[in-house]
Length: 356
Image (cartoon, rainbow, N blue to C red; front, side, top):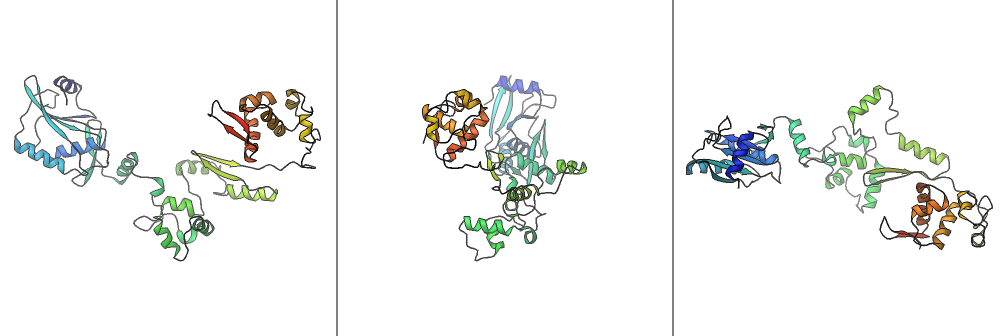
């Protein structure tokens, strides 16, 4: 509950985003429900009844009939909000306080409309754009659930992707494609495919930033739309290399290209012939860390040898010993991990690498 000193402090500061003043209960009690709805849709606030438009505490009296009318007005707000209404004596004058918390179930509606707090006023949202922005700010609209009216299901559905999805999800294709998508909730109420459905099953790309895309187009900086990934795949195939690997992790999109493998004369021979077998490493071909830095031995084998002799080394320690960058060292470590030859143990900052 507010204290008399707090009420005087709020009054001296004037109306604002979190405070609204009334000299008395308005003849149209609905004004109170609109203000309360606006505070609930915003960050909460106080309606102080008994303060005039000059920010002076004048006090007021609210009889049982008016209190009942206020309660009825608050009940008109949906979903239900808990408004704590009480009186406070301030220098011999009675000020009524309506304490409205910020709602957890936004949006709140009264008389069929949404109200929000803007500066010192309660504003009714009237346009579709205002309502859309409010829903987005309230985390009630998600990109993947928004309909995509530009998508033509009959012409732009990627049937290969769709079949792969059905197979991976163990979904029978005995019913129509439209029925399956409907069961997956890929349509909105009007039968338009949602963005999530387009991203999963569509063949054309979607422009995430249409304004920026349009500006780049005017500068002739946009090539064939959605041609990049197919061209990557085609060129890798023409070069006789594996297709690029696309991954999404923690919001980062990564593309991995495989290099051509080195030609090895035998299982133990390395291209330059310096190291012919693992016995050569043990028997002294790797005489010092300088040999490693000078690329006189295969770095991958050298990293493995270091771990064999010094289990628990960190990537940074190994990078220093072989005279390579941390990034280069990590590339060889990741390769050895994929071959199940080594593993990382311990905390990210203090752990190290061990033979598996």
